[in-house]
Length: 196
Image (cartoon, rainbow, N blue to C red; front, side):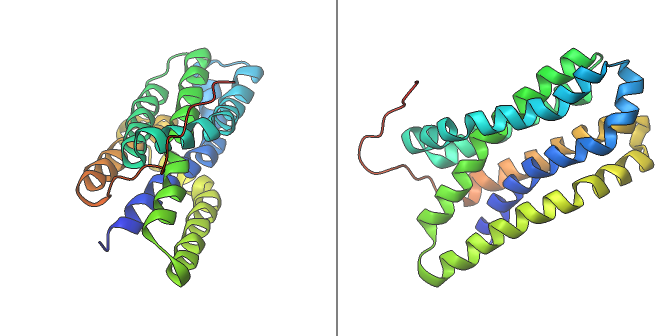
């Protein structure tokens, strides 16, 4: 299906975008929430730490329970975490919400590579992996630009909160299309979850 690749790449794009988009929002959210410097550091680092720590487990959960299922669950959690970030009233709550966002991204991201590797073979696989790299690169490059535009637009008076709340409609659209287009797949054999 033609929409398969844009859908799964949109999922990884939005998670990488959110890592970078927050950098532009830091001055205004720090003022608004009265957050300490350490809390602001954790707003950025908490996401990255949770993401990197959860990637291997996220991939194995996809092998065990289905990659589409974990992609959808990751998107759902990412949507909820984005909403929590957008309504945060304290620095501590925003840090908690960003860590949750990072964990959700770690559940979602490995499924994209696994799905691409399952669906595509040969030269087509090389092209889609190049597209994967391009999506991540564009998200990193445009994250701060998009964040700045959202804050400047000040949609509905949301200010910095729009950097997180914009994820809600996007994630819901991606989830709806995923249900229609993305096939389920699991790892062959009987993989197990290594808690250690």
